[in-house]
Length: 446
Ligand code: SAH
Ligand code: SF4
Ligand code: F3S
Image (cartoon, rainbow, N blue to C red; front, side, top):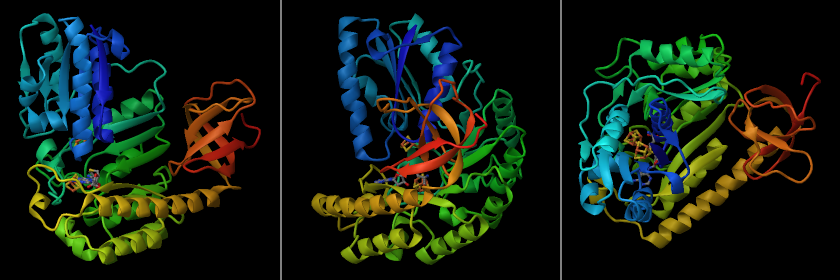
């Protein structure tokens, strides 16, 4: 069968989609461009209204293929699938599978079955009590040098704006042994950079699936695997970050000097109403300790503007916090009402115009901070793990794209034609662009 996957949402969704591709390929299915596919798999995100709407408009557009060829069908997975469930069957006659967030492991088999019985429809929406291990399909030869590894599923925090606990279910840690085995397997295949994934990695092990191993311990065990040259993790909740995890930044050389630590708001009153369970003083204390453990650590964050009841003064407090911490980058969003979350009932709602103006203001500030951070790198030397050709190729010398240890995108101009994808390359940084750096080869080692 020819299939095409479209993925929305966070890295966990992207990782699930990558796994689905590999699992289907190992069954003899072929990934193709949209126009040639007979099966569409849409992995959805429900975190804000916009990505949810995109799912409906995408399915509306893909339906044309089913109108032309009755054999074409679609599967909808992920967070909107969990939320809307069988509702997709009513809205789109060509949708024949909905699979929730705990059913990813079952999707390849379900798709095989549906491909053989054209009149059938399936809904796999149950939450499971423990983390569902998946088969480990053979990776493609010469795969990327970076990999993501799930360490947990779900979230128990119920921040008042957030739908994730409802659509991903309760937190379920994966068995530490399974995480380590996957990481060892990846390192043995040549993967050099591993990112551990979870909605709240700092509370790893603190649920029923926990096996007495804390996140700090897991981090140390993964860091000790030979061949793991770079280790990252995301996402961290400030209320749960342990002293041992902060200390790890000073102790583990291969733990990358970067941390994504969602702040959400710089106003203590709003943080309280968001149910985040930390205040700005605690956040600043964490930042200080991180900077002491690893001077120069690059910090990034998530921010929401226009949360119900956010005043001008609250918003200004966010601007001041962002400036004070000096985030290297941030993702910022307008608050979006989600069905069933506590903030739906909070008043007053902030009008669209005010929220849009606040978002723009915040993003302008962030752009200045990002520029400052990138400019400080110019003139220094670093090591870039090459990911592939640059997106933009200027006339003249070809260029490669990769990341420095902090995760900054670096475009490196090449003079030879050697394929350096997956290689660690010493680079001198020569120029800062808006969101990336430009480097030149350094030393004579390559
Ligand atoms: N588990 C992660 C984030 C998951 S969602 C954490 O706790 O940090 C990613 C980001 O989307 C959140 O950090 C938040 O900034 C944003 N977000 C979540 N719900 C939202 C909503 N209802 N409206 C706007 N942004 C939201
Ligand atoms: Fe959502 Fe909060 Fe859980 Fe993050 S920690 S996924 S923001 S409920
Ligand atoms: Fe979206 Fe689900 Fe991730 S709602 S952000 S895809 S956990």
